[in-house]
Image (tube, rainbow, N blue to C red; front, side, top):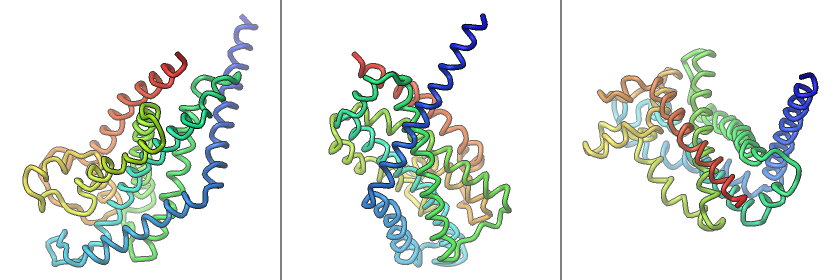
Length: 274
């Protein structure tokens, strides 16, 4: 019995070491790609300038006039959208690793079979935290503030990471299913409309009714609305269930996405062995 326990303990230690190795490899690879870092940092800056200062001046989201409090409305949406765009980074990285044979080399080594998938997930979560830190600094520079207090503010960032964590498994599954890196890069044509047809920049009630319904039930809208409530920022008025129970929806939708795509990603990774 003692021998079995020691074996199980050693196996757990080796598995955790494998996770640490893969996470370290992902972060080191990320640090050695300055172009990717510039893209991840530069894109939010461009989006803030475009939507807040160009389109935002004509947007009345609070009923108090065009442009009033639009920065406080748009920045939480920008946080949520950045988490959604991270899906493409995951898919491209997984497709690149598969295309270049990195996954095959890892499988040929005496490592835990789950190390690649789990290492990818943990590495991307750390990367998402860095993205949020950079974007929060930009938001503070242009005047955005959280009036919800430290616990609510931390809870809001926790919901953002929960959304990103759930979408990691969508990205891993897509990266394993697609043929190559080029195909993964084309996901932008799908992810961009999903992110835009939401309450990120425009309240659903200002859209045509059918489009507003889609927007209100978009998981991105739920997270954006929930963190607006927690930050104490302006919230769009709406009567749908996700809008009136935004925090519950922002927890439920990512859990459903994780429950669906985590098994699919693991199953797809396992199928690569055969």
